[in-house]
Length: 220
Image (cartoon, rainbow, N blue to C red; front, side):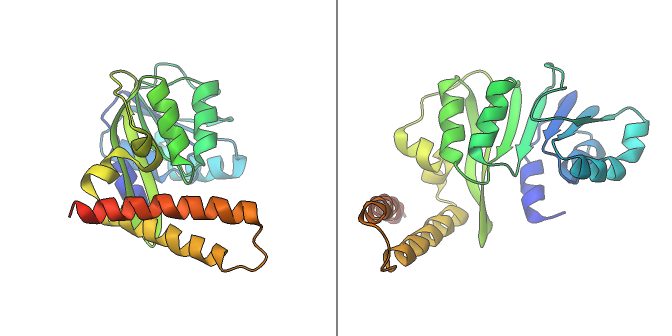
């Protein structure tokens, strides 16, 4: 099990049923069943190839009726009473689309690969409670957003953009992610063919990241 999968699984709550959407190889569903986090897991993927790999990994649980494979897009084919929905490894816009076309579950664990701010904004708008919201990883960085359907609280514009826990606790991974993006943006600025509009956008983003960096340093 990779460190990424281990970190995501650490946030899975104990529920009667779990849905792993975009299950890929099925490792997280396997972890949930093996560790008694759920009685039944639905593994869902739009790719027949990926779903077959997960079915093979979980074939004993499939035969026992504890694992239900669903070949579908997003939440299609899933019951509405699933206790927790896990969506990891998809883009933020795709995660929002899946939730909009489906439903917001009682509990959720989300790991967007990009556009995390759009996921946060959507959840806050819908009144969800975000209980964990931070960056993890080393070299490659990921955002983890977990929470519940009810009990939401206001998020500031900065918290939506960067994650509440990141701004409060300043994890090393978040600082690494910010520095990595700043380096990438400076590389763009060095390109002689960069159009002025794009240059202005890069400079604006770089300024925002510098503000975040300075704020984090001031609170140390």
